[in-house]
Length: 360
Image (cartoon, rainbow, N blue to C red; front, side, top):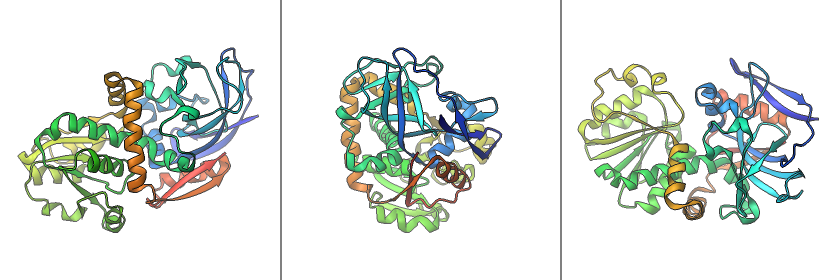
C-alpha cells in the first residue's frame, strides 16, 4: 500500500494522508521509492496557483483534492525498463507521497524524461529526472541543500543569464525584494560571480536585515521602509515579494531610472492589485512576469543539454560556497511530518534560516 498527502484544493490547510492501491507496474515503467524531499515556500506557491499553472496535474488525485509537487531524491525499487535496475538513485519532481511510477523516455546516461501521457501538456523542465551516478550537480554531502535551494537557485541563475544577455538593460545596479528568499540569494550569488560590475541591493523586512547582511551576497541591504533612500541610479528591479504597494513605491522612487521591472514567481499580475497597487499610471517600464520554465527550455536549446547543465552546475557549486551554510537543515521522518510542515509553511510560521527535509 502506498501513501500520499491529499490537500483540499479549496482549503489548503486541510490535508490528510491517503492510502493508495499500487497498480501492477506497466511495461517500460519504473517504480521509485521516494527517499527525501524538501518543503519550502516554493511548494506553497505550487499549491496556491495550482489550477492556473497546472501544478495539480503532475500527480493526479481524486476530485477536489491535490498532491503538492516537491523536489527530491528517489530510488528505483522495481523496473520493467531495460536501462534501469533496482537500486539506482535519481533526483527530480516528486509527489508528497512515498512512491511514484514513471515511464522513462529520452534516456541518457545523465537522465530521462517521464513520458506519462498526463504530464506532457506541462513544461518539460518538470518532467526531467537526473540519474545521480552521472549528474554534475550531485554532491552526496549536499543533497539537503540541493532539494531546498536547487529549484529556486535555478530560477536565480536564469534571471541573471537573462539580464546579462540583455546587458542588464543599461543598469548599473539590481534591486532585489525579499532578499532573504532562496531565489533572491541564488540570483545574488550568480550575479556576484558573473556580473560583478552590477551593484546588488537587497530589500528585506527589518527583522531579516541582519540575516541578509551576514550572507555576504549583497553590496547593500535596506529594510522596506528605506526605499526612499535608493537614489536615482539606472536600475533594474527583481520583485520576489509580490507586494503591489512595495512595487509601486519602487516605480515611483526610480521613475525613468528604472530600466526593467521583473516579476518573479507564478503569481498572476491581476492578483497583485489593480495597476499593481500604484494606480494605472505606474511610472517607468511595465512590470514583466518571468516564468522560469520557459527560460530554462530556451537556455537548453541555445547551448545543448550538456553545456547548459555544466553552466548551471558550475554556478550551483559557487552558490554552495557562498550560501550553502546560511541555513540549518532540519530532517523529519514520515508523511505526517510533511503534512504538518506544509500547513505551518502556509501560515508563514517557518524561519527563513531553516531548511526542512522530509524522509517519507
